Length: 80
Image 1 (cartoon, rainbow, N blue to C red):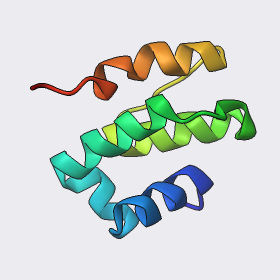
Image 2: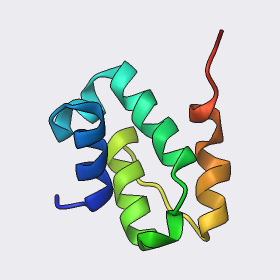
Image 3: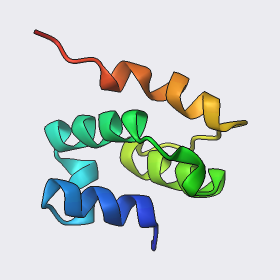
């Protein structure tokens, strides 16, 4: 799969793309990064759906860019 968001996250976390899905700590960090991503509209909704589906291992659909932030908000919270 060629997905610019996945490629960006892999570079950001210094791991191969597959490790984004298989390493829980990297996965949750990547999902948090996506939630906080400032320019969501820079990528088509389809690309967001593919990236989040890849990370979670199940099919995800977004009706709007606002829904992305709402859906991923739990992943942006850090326990202290």
